[in-house]
Length: 343
Figure 1 (cartoon, rainbow, N blue to C red):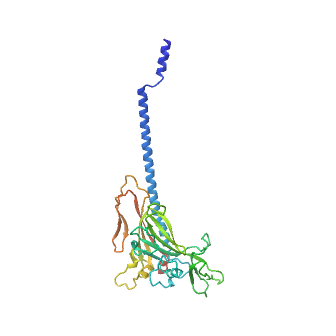
Figure 2: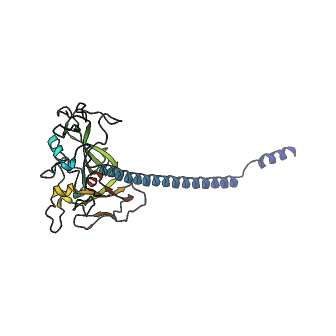
Figure 3: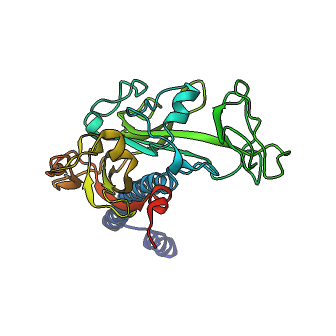
């Protein structure tokens, strides 16, 4: 009797097969729920990251372009307004110092939809996208206040502040050009400012083996133009230029192609004159996410301003799974516009 009670007691301390199966089923249901929650959270986090990168890249691209455009035409102490305009539009790819000097009055230049692109533009440029050229000098003096020191071979501009010196300024590459101009004391060497020619375009790849459209920049280094990848995921950009027809520093007309801009009765609407009269720009930048979003279909149509004929430029719908957004900015080109301002 005592032995039987002990056996029953031991049996009562365990689980039956039914209880074990029920507990396992509940555990698996809880585990499945946790996995679904984890998967959804991971997917939401990935989507947030893709959207954040798209927003960051678009804003950064507009900021880069805007910052450079605001100081286009800045040449330090050089009186650019007194310089003679070149006979024809300059070649932004030129590495000849005489061409750099002649191009200074043309602070900005562009190629609408890439037509007539200069020879230094790579073959993998994304078709039917704008090319933008900005000319200026650095806002800091070489070797002063954290500015890069003067480097042999790089292009520089030196302007005299001494009243009896000629010529008033010198443009050339350090090491092959004599920079002998002086400051106001007519003894101390005048400052050097690096001459910049920045050519912006969109490449079909990011130069890292990936076919991601990327905002690129060609930079004048003196003996060559060097490619610099700037922002991935920039798919299109269109620039509209505000032209000052009456010399008051304010735009009177907008066009995406100043090279061919004219209006009835205009006798001065030459390509050189039009580009020298550009005082504002309207930027339209289309940025896309770096990766596709699972289950997403882009059915939107994106507006990128107007073309040279005044027709709307649109992109989409693409239905390719990438998220996109258009970023715009109006930029006043302070130096040429400021020289024309009337009190």
